[in-house]
Length: 190
Image (cartoon, rainbow, N blue to C red):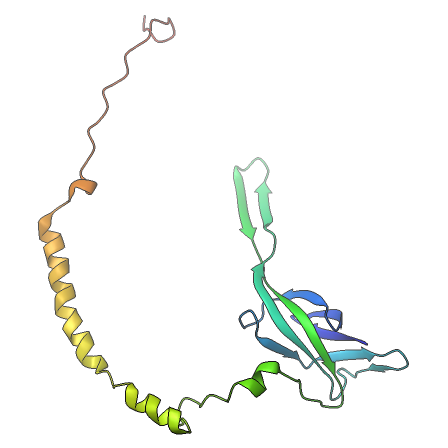
């Protein structure tokens, strides 16, 4: 079975275990991505073409690597005008390994979703006894007080650096003596 998906303004023909290189997608290596824009599905016996997308079909993949493409040089020149511009560009790319092609609104099977419990959202309190221990173990930091304490120390350090003057690493180097003239006729005035 293979499918035609659309991502980054381009279409890709994919099958399970294929590796494709697409325009940059958000996520780190190992993250799961889902492509909902499936334009066509092809099985051994049947084919399904979407208008524009196949209803209920998704393609699931895993990010293998975030990378960059080869350098492309853009060079512009206006002849006889002493005008030229050279610019290089490397496109951000994502390498993806296709893991599943799903039909009929099936949900992707993830190995790590059953193993790890869901983490609480930002505003929610964690559930269970371990969560109560973790809340008690982390004391609250007074953020405003620590920032106020750092500011006078930074100001004092900046003022001492100004008054101290240049240090040995920034001192001027002595100038070199002019080179001695050679005995060649070209070098002599005359």
